Image (cartoon, rainbow, N blue to C red; front, side, top):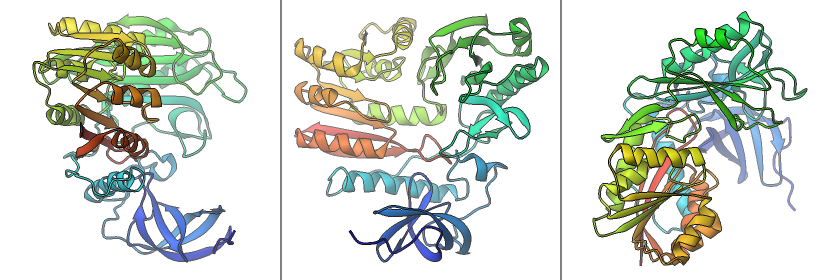
Length: 449
C-alpha cells in the first residue's frame, strides 16, 4: 500500500476541481483526493490537513488564495457554525450547477449509465424562507438553554432563533416554546445523562397559513396550561412524549392539547389533511414542480392500474388517480395511511386504495396476488429501495415507472439494478427542493425495454 502524499497537520495550497453535495471542495495532491469543506471549484486555497485515510484526506479551509467569482458572503449569522446550509457561500446559480452535476456523476459513476438524458434542474426564484416545517432540538449552550441545530458531525447545539430557510411562522412558534420554557425553568433533556425534560419543538405551517406545533418531552409535560396560552396563536398544539434513549425525535404517544387534530394542505387543487407524523415535502412551491414532473413523465391513462410505493399521505396517489383507472398506495406509517384514505374521501376520489405495510412486504404480496400493475412510482427514504422492492418491480410487469429520489447515490444503485432487470432510463429531471442545503431531488422516468 502506497503512503498517502499528505500527512495529518500538514498545511499546503491546492486547486479545487469540483464540489460535493455536502459542500466540500475536492482537490488532489499527486492524484490523491483532498476534501476541503467550504472551498469552491476553481479556487486556490490554503488548507490544514485534519484527517488522512488510505484513500482520501480532509482539510480545514484556512485561506482562499484565489476566490471563485461565484463566492458570496453568507446571509446567515451562524452559517459557519450551524452547517445546515452548506451552500450559503455560493451564488444560487452555481449551487444549481453543482447539484445537477452531482446527479449526472452519480448515475454515470455509480449507476453505470453511459450517458444521462438529463433536463435542466428546476430551481427557485427565491432561495430563502421556503421550509414549511422545522424540528429544533432544545439543549444547554454557553449562553444557557436554547433551541437550535447541531453542528456538523456532532451533538453540539448551535443556538438559532431565526433560520433563514424556515418560514417565519415556524420560528415564531419555536421561540414561543422557548419563552415558556425559560419562564417556568423547564430543564433541557441531556442525551448523556438522560435527565431533563424538554427535547424538541417541531412546527409546521401550511400554504393557507395554518400552524401546528409539537412539543416533545421526556416524562410528563409540566405547566401544560401555560404552554397552551403561550401558543394561543397556533392552530394545532400537540404534546409528544418520548422517554426512549434515542435520537429519533418523536415517541409513540401524541396528545392534542388545543386546536385542530390535523392541518389542511392544498396541492394542485387537491386538499390533504396532515397529522404530526405525516410525511409531506417541506417546500410547497417545489413540491408542485416535483410531483408535476413525476405525473407528466409517467403519463398514466384511464385504462391503467398504477402503484404508488412509499405513498405517505397519498399526495402522488391522488394525483395519479385523476388520470389512471386505479391506484394502489403502499405506506408503513398507520397515521399516514389513515390520512391518505381520508384525503381520498375528501377529494371524492374513489379509484385509490391504500395498504398499510412495509413496502418490501406489501409490493411482493401485491404482485404475487396477480394484481396487474401497468405503471408505478416509488419515492423511498434516503436509503433507497429494499432489494425485495426492486425484485417485485421487475416481476410486476409494469412497463413504465418513475423513481423519485432524495439521494443520488442510492438512486444510482437502484437504477443500476433496474436497468440490469430490463428497464431503460428515458428522462432524468433534478428538482432543487432544498436551496442552500446539500440535498437534491431527482425524478427518473424508466421504461421496460
